[in-house]
Length: 433
Image (tube, rainbow, N blue to C red):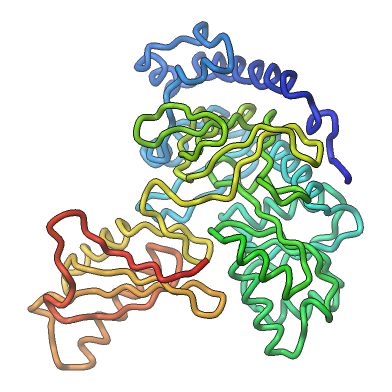
């Protein structure tokens, strides 16, 4: 089994913890000295860098939230000057305000090295031809996997998303051996190939799939592996941390989080108290060496647990289990984060409709679908088809712009949707993972 950086990846656990502490101590001092945001946060928490004398002392530090990035849009909490930034990525803004992440050259190198270790752990390397079917551009998936694959010497086919039949043709023509995409798109590729009379398993060289950006299950993994003859590996990351960074190894038993890059905690989402290894809770990460947009104790919102035992592959870094859900009401539709609150925000700006709506999420074939049922205002209710179509088009256009994903629209009569005395249940998710 090949390991990209054995010195780091097989580092004894105690030595790794010492390295993490050195990085943390440096980070805290740097931010207290040069970041107005973190200096204020630490003062509010009544903690000084001198109080951080062990890794366990990280619990003295304040949490950071996604709302901190939105409230300081676009770059008020960056800690590197603009002339040291070499790239921006921007989120879709599904919660009403996008978040901007900046990168120095060192930030990009750490991100790329993280993926070089991860893709090697998934069994890839020089001689592989990797089709990157994540989106390129403001989304982090495409460029992140692209540079990681090139780093390990693989040949990249930057297909991005869509044009599925062409992707399958290229997969055959260029002898693609690996692919990176969402799990639902992987299934869609398989189904489309079948319609073309092509078997992924028998008629292509594809052997490895690196899949993420949306939830998927062990059952889906087994089905893909059996039907397509591939090994499917889970990949994890968020745009705020840098992008996709961590994958499973050949053991397929948890996602390796490189400890020299990220310090991982699992907390009780209600109390904020740190939970022991093995217990399920909210994932919190501190990116230990980031320059442009440092992250200390960032509450990601994903539910998982951590395993700190040495992996049978020999790597000593902790692993997190497959993401089990979210602490908030976020939906992931074809790789895009969607919050019901954003749908509500958009609809309230359209006078012809009321604030009553319902979201129905389903899976047709391999792809997620989302239908928004919207209640008309009494004054706008009409039996004239052209009037209804005009309103429907307006709602469809606005939601697509807000959510960055196309959704179905169904207009219903005033009073047709249920009312709630307590917390409204606006989402019906019929997907079976």
